[in-house]
Image (cartoon, rainbow, N blue to C red):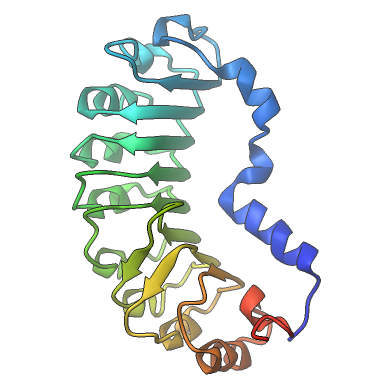
Length: 239
């Protein structure tokens, strides 16, 4: 299969939400403390330093929040932002329990970068509006079993960090996910080397992964899903 590299890049940016976040613009949304965030601001970026996050839960106009160094009290403040649609928890995430986020009933996009101690990610699947879930460098995630019934998710990213890979035991739990359009797994290893479960995802259109399975696995997947865009299906990638 051949397709323009620009298509792969465009889909990668779209499914990761990069097209909706201009970093040059976001510099204007950075605030040293929650109290500096205007009450009518739809966007904000706050990195925790001591107790500077206090009051963020009162900024009810927020629709997109980037939060760094989030501990449990900060997370619980964020949980009051019932109108929030996009939440990015930047590295490191030191909170231990994601359950408070289940009250964010309008959230469609959630990214969690470097959660150090979280071992239970299932609570976030209780957010009915969630469509994009990106998790990077999860130290305590033992498998993808908790995603087995995540039929409402359209984009799933389970990835390693810049300097550390994450080993996925199997992607079998993703088999048959009805809404899945993109699976992102950069900087990962796949223990069982089996891509067949992805062929059972009826809406899958984009795959961006490490070279974590043999060539024949990617080719078999491509044969079963001829419209799938994946850079490992491009001629010349295995030379």
